Image 1 (cartoon, rainbow, N blue to C red):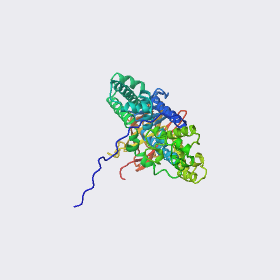
Image 2: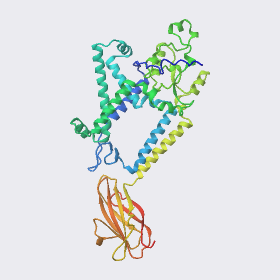
Image 3: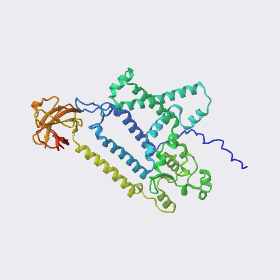
Image 4: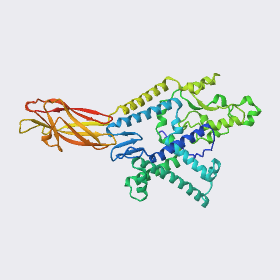
Length: 479
């Protein structure tokens, strides 16, 4: 009987706590800029006001679920115009493809919400516990009252950040000042408190404690990105042909021809927010934040060697440079067919959405004929059909809308609010601002009228006249 192979003691490697070191440089300053802009937009946008007149909310960005509206500054999206939202989502997806094809996981490194909030929590760590060495000593130290108080203070800041993150999110779905007032008085809807609690928990858990584990294990995007990158994509690259073999500065000074430029200082590893060693080559833990470039460039400057040992480079450019050729400028690497195709598709969708937005009508007419009964015979022998009309006013002021029959010779119509004696070929109805008004209409045609199609035409006057036409069927006996 064959012996079974021994089972491993552990099925996975335990997590190694990442204590990244503070660094300054162009990429770090760019991360500061992106974090400041994105957080300002997220926390501040619900408080921006936008005057839409007396009949609409004045919050600049609002997802009004109760009235099924989406407001974004001067744009108002109705439920039947969801294609605008779909178009924006498609643009976001293609934009990610474009960025990934051009510069790898730059989205992950700078603008991904997980990255932004993780970066924010790491700055809280430095503020409370100190830089890398101080945090490592504190982690290894036994639990004393000083450590408990320091941890309690830091985790309180975590909770405040998480709370404001959840609080800002719910403000996109209701008027921000009103919601804040009701929230603190305990009068907000229960879903508001539940949402804030859930988002507080997830923000603190993912950004405060799990951090790099989300990027390495939970997020599917790194696995998808590999299909969009090729040998022409700019990636954060360690130039091993220049850096190897590694050796300390003292060894390199004694025998300069035996060692490369890498002095094995480990600065690139210590500043990495996911704790990887970029010198081991491309790996799923690299989010292309380029902080290792800042760290390595500083070391190269201090020891008098040229920058760029770790740099943005393509695989093709790396091979060319390793063979003794010159590296192409980054902007030339970006101008290639794949990125231009993505850019063209992305721009075309954007222009199409802008055109549709500018050309759309602010009135709409829906017509539904009654099926049971399909017609009625009136006392004078004429034939009556019934219809349900929906008049949609997509402006911020009431509008007088005129309904007119086209076709169906000799026919007249009236509504529930207009007696049959006043039936006519044209009727004017006042529709409230930003609303859909349902009207029951009755169309009567003379004796002998055959079954045929005809049109309801909706038109408005004023400074910007608009119209909409809906073709429907008139049913008569004997067909």
